[in-house]
Image 1 (cartoon, one colour):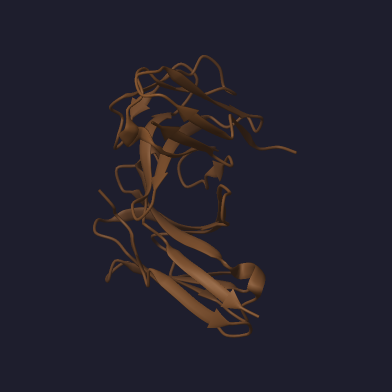
Image 2: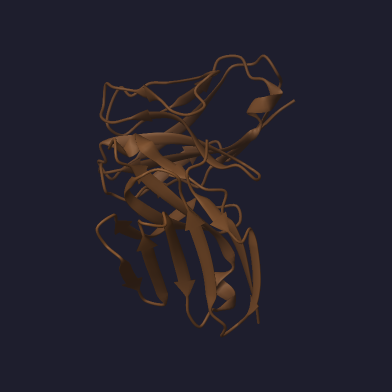
Length: 112
Length: 113
């Protein structure tokens, strides 16, 4: 089934540790995104990539980095996790402007 | 910063009733999108309405857009228990770029059998 796969599904992480959230899509979409979802705040954009080889900062990029080596993969890295990064992280993709987003099922991350 | 603000924050209705959710936004947009999220799952796209459109339908869903009031509404007719979910509006700004899609905090809809 075409779509977006995120891994892991959930993770408990000690503060200060490094963590990479994986995201893979098989729809050949140009654009990919990482959002975090916190209660009462909706989804906030962390980083995005309009096409392979390019990335950009969203609304809340601090403490996170991304790479886009190819069309399918868009990993999100927390270099040194802090408790405020406890959240549910969603990866999404789209064809481009005026196109809907397709979401993965999220990674629930708890930083202790 | 949130562009879209959904109203109400929570809505509880009986099966068969209609559910109306509203979204207001602050700046001019290219399009407005509605998404649905079931508990523990990712968001699923429902409808995209462009700034030059006033109304769109998809099955039991009807979306209206009033750019003069910077507002949109999502109507679910003849609701079912399976419609229980959170509903989000998202706006794509005029500066273009899908990176500009901004989500509201959502409306939690509960449909009781």
